[in-house]
Length: 121
Image (cartoon, helix red, strand yellow):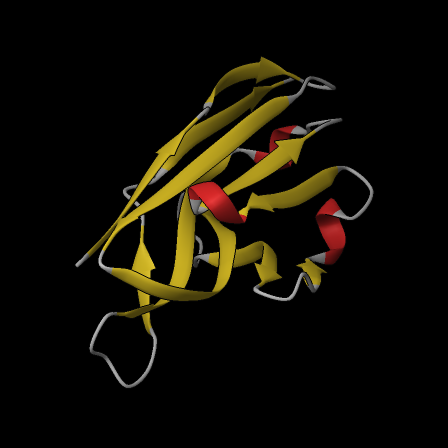
């Protein structure tokens, strides 16, 4: 099937930066969309940013101007550059991809294992 492997989380002070990466591998015919979600303790998982196959970008309001999502189609990899980090950005960040595998008629959603981002005040 499809595997999503994330990297780049960690501990950073307020105002710092981190870059997350997520590489998709497996029986990939086409990736329709890749994105990042986050889940803080006691809260629901929410969309942070996403990018479609034709390059359309979407950001949640709280990260606009601070986070940048980008992708490398050749590597099936999506990145999230996070700057001016705030304590409220602390969460587990999950990579998500809508992938059509070989032989499938439609895309399915896949998730990474999550990577912890902690911003200290």
